[in-house]
Length: 436
Ligand SMILES: Cc1ncc(COP(=O)(O)O)c(C=O)c1O
Image (cartoon, rainbow, N blue to C red; front, side, top):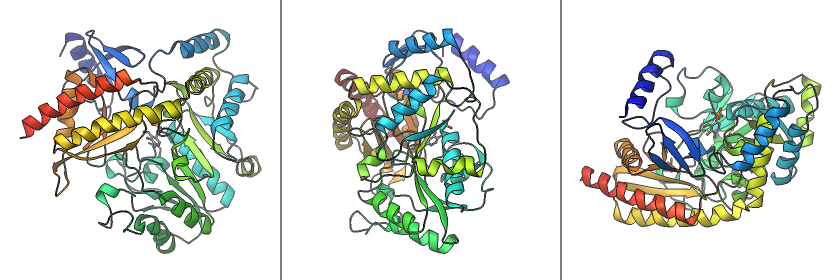
């Protein structure tokens, strides 16, 4: 480890909570980024295929975004929402342009957690009910409510403290909760939503919340028809369908602007954050006007920083760049290329148990044994070190920490994908060799 990284590590340990865990056996200290590449404090260059957890949608230091942000900084940094400012309105217009169906009105906050808090609060106010159905293996954020919605024990440090939240089976085909396969399973995981409503709630639910693809849970893609079946059940019981697109929005899954569109379902509320402003803090909760209208009637709600002029300027510019480059179509093509390469590796390396995902959100689940599917978090940790050593940054996740998460900026080109695949191939060869 270079001297600067060692020094930063020492200083961090003195003043930052240990809960700031770091990737890699030898942690990485970043200094700058440009496009798809980042440089560490020792001057080493890396191809960034994780984008700071799916945040840098159009690459680091994108000139158009920096220009708009600098322009805004010179005018006014903060106004609060008590005064009109064109940026937050323009951003609302942009989201209304790309959001599906009747979802045309937004409330802005500063994070995915707050976007989910806002969605659940709105659903409760609208339905005048309190109970929420979430999914196992899900991640919703780090507020008390969001941690309780989360379905991964490791991310719930204080356990359950908010009543009225029940978790249904995860639509996790590789580790099917009823040990079946699609379509013979008869969508038992979707049926479970109804079972949970009938057995564990009053039967009068406010909402169901789910990610189109479970992100932190290891890029778990629900089977076809799943969300259609679940939305029917949820609506039959009078609940709203909230879709958490914190990771999956803005073309990430290819072909569409939002992940849920692959299932042909129109949600009542969409939450998003991460990739919306290419790194500037911003969360959005998007819904139909008839649902949003309930709030001022029921009570007040404000976010001091939410939708501030600077983050909004970054978000408008980000969405413009995505639109100018027809990103959903581009991601569909690049995603197919990435997927093909990963599937080829699965034929060679037995440590790969499953390859899954959509667009530029591809997961590789690693196992100690393909038959027993015993998770191998050890292989995932080794893969991270081996890819970093060869100049590639990727992420990991999953309830067992054994899923590689590969999610480059949406502007990744064929050359970037080939470069990443070549490094991954060498890294897999090294890890498979070491594991025997
Ligand atoms: C699906 C999903 N929802 C919500 C969140 C919480 O977002 P934030 O960390 O911005 O509060 C995350 C963060 O990883 C997420 O992946």
